[in-house]
Image 1: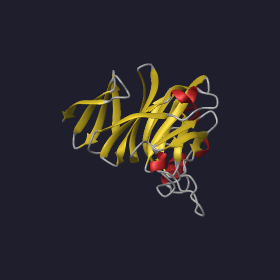
Image 2: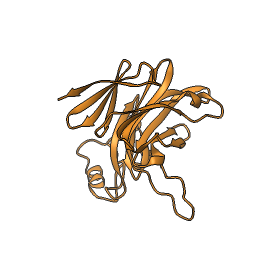
Image 3: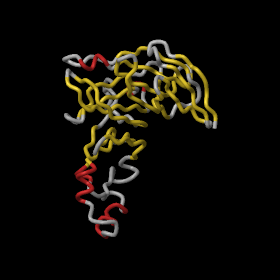
Image 4: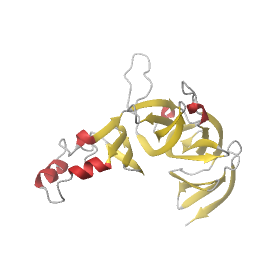
Length: 231
């Protein structure tokens, strides 16, 4: 067991992703958080430990917070104004070539045009790339995959034109120094894109109302809507 925040006013976990023995979260106010599950499982005192239960049940205390790595995600500083936290809504961890070495990076998206695609390097506990996702103003879903031999990030969200799916080529990350991911294309999917699942070259994009759009990404530069699932 481990607390991710000190309470609702401190932060709120929105989405989680598991890769190996690491748990990655997208959080409101806390940015990206990482937990080594082997470590916290080894420290677990048991489900009936009174000290742990009191700590987890009282706002402002928490349990095992020293085992949580937090990578803040901030807006770029505007002139004469403080930076603000970007609330994140989805997160994925994937092995990608970064500066010539294949390693695990964390990908997130959130409630800001300048936080459409956020990439963090857990090895350095730092955000290494942060950029807009096309016309998306609030990102709700992110997925990382390989298409046409390229590492690809997909971001679903809402913005100009309604519900959108934006396709990024992550290949420039392999450069030294790392280049910026490139937007290859975008497509209107409608609704409120909240989740993305890949099946072969097809992106299944949940858009709310019990519906999901099917988008063929055989050619990532020319996505095609091929149908809709209802139910």
